Amino acid sequence: MSGYTNSQTWEAWLDVYNVSWNNTSFIFLASVALSAAIIIVSWILPFNSSIRNRKTKIKIKIDEPEDDEQELQRLLDMAHHAPGDVKKAQRRALERNIETHMSDEQRQAEREAQSQQLAAIFKMMKEQEEKFGETTIDEIKDQMKLYCG
Image (tube, rainbow, N blue to C red; front, side, top):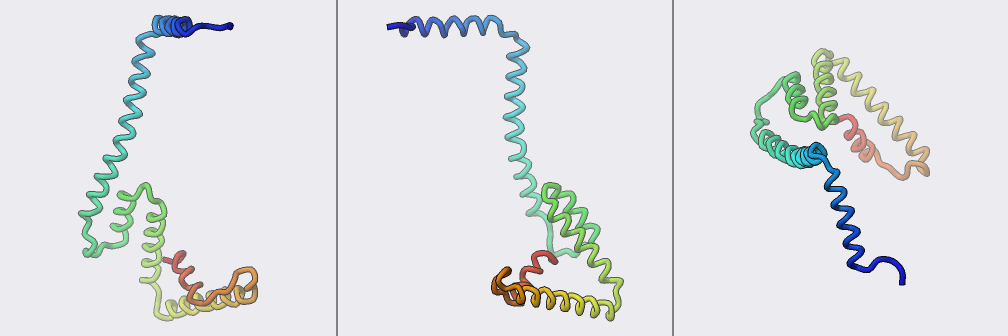
């Protein structure tokens, strides 16, 4: 039988440990401790900030009318982590601004153009039913709502 016995193996490990400990500097130990502390703090802080954000979201009054700039600024402040909501708010503010400056004839022409586009999409999907499957006009309208708000 060759190799170490159990007592020799532990003695070898103890020798390695002693050599490593004797060659370890205080600065190395301090940097490891500081790194561990930073990692632990970074895990704890996002959890606490999400609780704080949740509490502030509850305090927001929804029944008060806000103008578009205030709504956009509020979303920018609260939802920096949700760019989709910010983009939707920007798009809604722009749409409202454009709609307020449109005449009744322009609004009617816009609705007609949307109807014609929807009809053209439905016709194309019906012509290529093997590619798109069986669809109804209501399904297309529901799909459009996802993109148009």
